[in-house]
Amino acid sequence: MPILVKDYTWQQTEKEIFISVPLKGVAAGASNVMCTESYIKANFTPFLFEVFLFAPIDVDRSITKIGNGIILFTLYKQEPSIWDSLSIANADKETMKRLRENAITRVQEKAKEDAQSKAARKRENEKYSLEIMMKIDEEERKRIEYSKEEERRKASEELEKFKEQQRLEEHREQKRKEEEKQRNALNKSMFSDSPKSSIQAQKHKIEKVVPPTRKCGSIKIQFTPRVFPTALRESRMAEEEEWLQKQAEARRAINTDNLDLQDLKEEEKNPEWLKDKGNKLFAAGDYLAAVNALNLAIRLNDKMPTLYLNRSACHLKLRNLHKTIEDASKALELLTPPVPDNAAARLKAYVRRGTAFCELELYVEGLQDYEAALKIEPSNINVKSDAEKIRRIIQGTSPDPE
Image 1 (cartoon, helix red, strand yellow):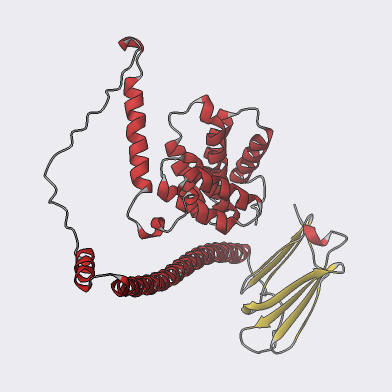
Image 2 (cartoon, rainbow, N blue to C red; image 1 turned 180 degrees about the horizontal axis):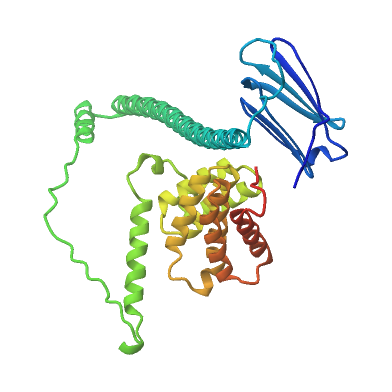
């Protein structure tokens, strides 16, 4: 049974009410205050202060301060006037119960509305952040495309200048040869015994000898058949044929007619070289450049799970959480069937995707990925600790991290 506080003081003006309630030695943090239009309450165990106000107040403008051993209410009246008393006179228990229940209902509804508005603002902020990230990515993509286009244009101009210079040099060389030829012919005609014979010799030299027309024919090519010396039950011919087919597809992909890939250097057409370059850029902290290197490697070979796994780490550093989830999911899709050789890669993919889910406050999905990672390596202390933290957040026993 709480002890009602009656030794409070109050003052008023035409527009304001000032109420001072002593805390009676109770810590300020242990008090709970509720304020509505017609009812105010302060609960600081074992004491209770409540007043059913004489007239309605403006709750949005009213202020409550707790400190220095008192609770100070500053209430603003809805209509300026001088009250006869602070509370309703001669109110029966039924009326007080009804007013108290209405006040509690009003507070609960307002708390629910505030929570809904906060959730709506949070969703709008997330949507705005996503749009900003997409806009930044689009601008970066356009900037890269513009840079490539400028490089191609400069290279084309330099090539045209080089070709023009070559043509001029060839023209000069041809002209020089013709002049030298004319000088030699003139010298020969001057020193020859017979002018007629010199003219015939010069004419014979100028005439071109046309070779005979080449005859039609066909060339037959016979390939040496591949021989598998092993017994048929032990043969790996099907696997070798599949490997050769994949190699041919990879060569066709590298030799594609895409203009962007034609400008690449020879080593830049190797996905493994691009993957190593992305790893070096990641270690240096240049995550955006690492993403660009891995993007090109994936265009050359989109069946390597390591490329998607490494790019998911870059996107996680850049806070591109949705792209992190996409790349980690693609890596897990390619890391099939699950075998001990790809266990470490699958563990990284689950942890990175789970981290991205938790950053997006999708804790249930994040916990599922961490539990999948623990099934791969149950003795991993860090993964086990993080999974326990996520589980406590879901159960409400730990504050929601900002």
